[in-house]
Length: 205
Ligand code: TYD
Image (tube, rainbow, N blue to C red; front, top):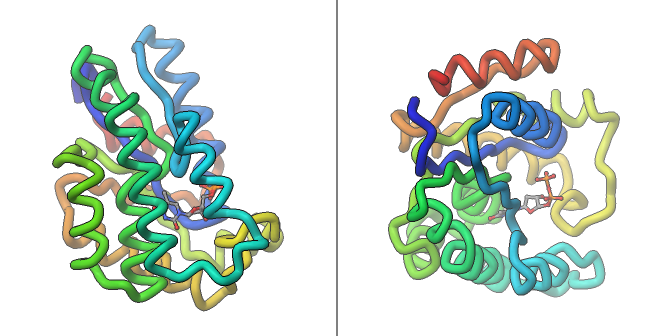
């Protein structure tokens, strides 16, 4: 895959090893002299980071599912216009830690808002800017939690319970079926270096 001007996202359940794999992937890009922009969701701009704080605040117990989904979409709208589109237009590779597929898995499936609602609100946010490839770290939420040694219990979403996180995983698998050309399902039960190599191979770089 030629990386110039490409949009790559990483997705996975809590504890899937996503942060570690993103670190390894960034080192790979740097070692190979590939220029890139890295951002995370929710966040990545000053305004989006403020929205992130509201979404994840454990005090915000009354937040409705709809408000949550709209806040994720707002943070995304700001990030897209302020950072992602300009970088893609200048020919840079963009690497994003979570993106719209998190809203599909967490809000559409696990919260039960449905794909129509999430697709509709995000159509205002993303202006057709879908990832070229999405690296999905394919480990069930149960295996991921076991490997990680339980939830960190430091944000509202992590505290949502095992059933919720199982639904997130099932949601991801459904989304992967809807977008078979874009989704790369990466087996990540083995050593982290092996997983990293699986990612590079799947991306064809
Ligand atoms: P974060 O600490 O960044 O989680 P992780 O390290 O697992 O990526 O917190 C982001 C949380 O927000 C995470 O639990 C996933 C959730 N999320 C959604 O529910 N919907 C979304 O659209 C996005 C982008 C994230």
